[in-house]
Image (cartoon, rainbow, N blue to C red; front, side):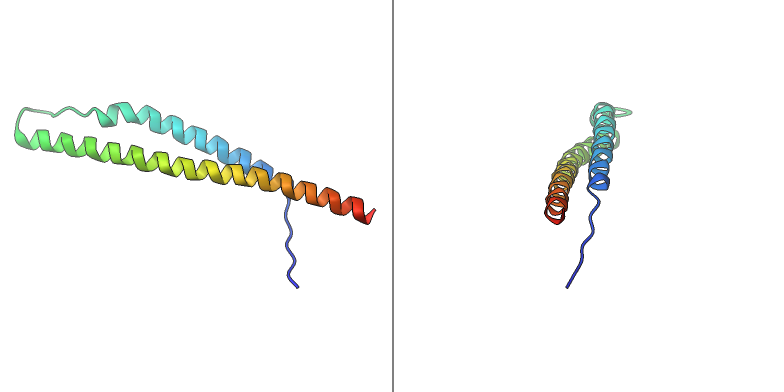
Amino acid sequence: MSIMHAEPEMLAATAGELQSINAAARAGNAAAAGPTTAVVPAAADLVSLLTASQFVTHAQLYQAISAEAMAVQEQLATTLGISAGSYAATEAANAATIG
């Protein structure tokens, strides 16, 4: 027989902290998006043009991947919050049954 122990309050607190982390990461990514996706070439030569283009492409790719990662982290935070509620309800039902 396996035993599992869950702390609903800890799950809820962790979900809240994760949402705060996500908000901070989103703000940082938004602040970095403008300067990193609008790199201008240092000169009019081909190397400068290609280098600036590479920086812009890399920044755009980072923003796309970061948006996907934030979505996954938000799903995790939501799932943790829902799980905390489920565990708390189950604990309350168990306590009521036991008396």
